[in-house]
Image 1 (cartoon, rainbow, N blue to C red):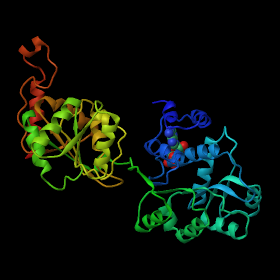
Image 2 (image 1 turned 60 degrees about the horizontal axis):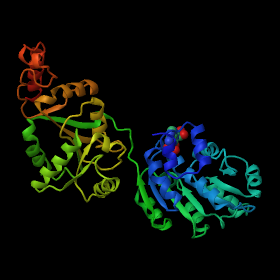
Image 3 (image 1 turned 180 degrees about the horizontal axis):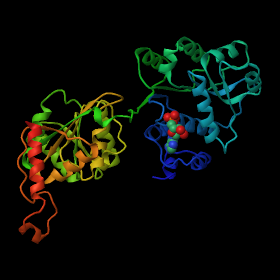
Image 4 (image 1 turned 135 degrees about the vertical axis):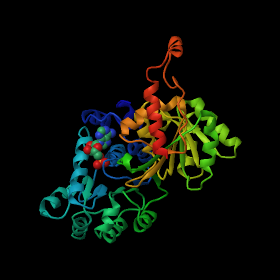
Length: 414
Ligand code: AMP
């Protein structure tokens, strides 16, 4: 993807120009999901941590919308308010806005505790397009009539869970009550404690929800096992595994689109409802399958590596590698989808005799062997390697080495 990927989200030329200056090539998942919704004026509940690109996800559409509105801020008034729990975050947001709005005539100012009132009062006198504020100082300035929120049509609350931890929620409620009802409201939080869910319910109007799982999952935290089984036994093993209720949200990976379709068909014959996600399906069909899976109405999603790229679904209980990927890195990407922020997950792989080579590459990459479940059948000599016609008839120089590995694998299983 290139900068045009940002253009596809519907952002104005001036913002695209600024993004190019900032060398942003590709929207992050939260950006590609949230920006189109926000440009349309939806309210949004964003569950995402710092580092996901959430600041650009809310500031880019805000800038676009403000420019579209084409009105000017009135004296001692603001058109948009961004609330942040700390000064550091407020300044960081202000910096981001500076970067993205460099080709736009948009004014902004920060009001926060710990610094003198006077410069902030002066900055507000003529009115600002965007006000970034910590709650306490903002309330002070409102009470002293240095600024009014009566004309403020955009409200963004960032890091709401930290606001709550720092005891600001009452102040936030007071502030929200001063805004017009006719407004766009966004609430971002890394976690969703009951108090924040309640606040979101009170202040958001039919919100869209975008949730981005943390990407900092360590492979070590994932329980990884391998079943050495023949190709023909994979289907039965999968069905048997799926009988356990703790496999509540499962992605099954295949190497090919055809393979994915076959797994879906076979599961269906065994009474297991699943859907395939791959490049031959229309965008709509993929979106439908994904939505069902995300909402928990589909328990098993069968996917190829490429189709699964960029999917963010929380609560995936198990990843099953029905076929091992050719690239060991793909294995790491696959299994990273189970396990959420900080928590462990479970990955189960099937390995037939033709896939032993892939298994070895994976174990080399992750620097540890997978836990073997059941027996390891001996590997037929010459299997799993690309062979020319002649090579098949000649003694294979690697056969001994592989048998040694197989024995070792047997020992691990015992
Ligand atoms: P945030 O999660 O908003 O704190 O952003 C984390 C960092 O990622 C910031 O330094 C941003 O400048 C940077 N960033 C955000 N979006 C992108 C993008 N699409 N491409 C490159 N960098 C980005």
